[in-house]
Structure formats: C-alpha cells, structure tokens
Length: 110
Image 1: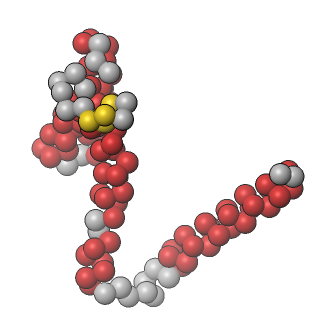
Image 2: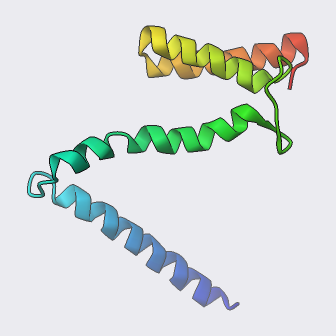
C-alpha cells in the first residue's frame, strides 16, 4: 500500500474521531438526554473498565485460573477491598500494582 494512502487514512480517521468527540463537548448544556438514558450512561465507564480488566484477572494463558497461585487475581482482590473501603482511585490503583509486584517478587507467583 502506498505511503500516501496510509497517511491520508490516518488523517481522516483522526479528524472523524475529533469530530465525534467535539460534537459531545460542543453540545454540553444544549443537549437534553432522557433521565433513563442518563442513568444508563452512568454505568458505561464501569462496564468498559470491567471488560478490560476482568479477563486479565481470571484468565491465565487462555484458561480460567481461580487458584491461589494467580498473582493478578490476588492483587485484584486486594485492590477491590481497598476501593470498597477507601473510595480512592489513586490509592486503589497504587495498592493493586504494588500488591502484584510483591506477589510476583516475594512468592514467585505469575
């Protein structure tokens, strides 16, 4: 594929992405959503984050791994407890990462 076509494709996709995001930002305050839709949209970030994180916690090399030798699952459980108790996102992420590193370094879990 010619280099010029690749650059044109990248630019067009970038402009389309920018336009769709700008349409929501530009319509702030002007666009009224139904209350039911607003309530449903509150759960989108949680659902998207769960879809990204849960496979890494529960799967190991494509297989379900619910054993105590799954460092990611153990670190995830620790992070969930911290999130539940503190409601602090930065502390939750930091604790989860440190827990994972310690489990891997001290106990050789992967």
